[in-house]
Image (cartoon, rainbow, N blue to C red; front, top):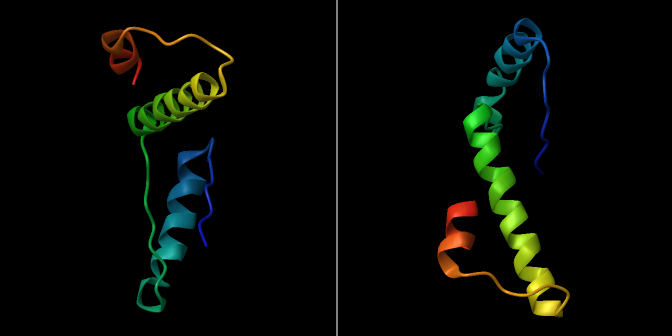
Length: 71
């Protein structure tokens, strides 16, 4: 199971991460994403959504360099 949590307060985030780290031996893995990582994931998802729409025939394809630049 995966859970994504977005913290607006860094102090609270650090406390929660500290608590979750106590469960490492039980198999809990904490992965933190900074803002640039979140932007990469967002752009990747948008690209996948666009591919689905192209496959459905809802939108036209773009030039490959435009698509890759958007990712």
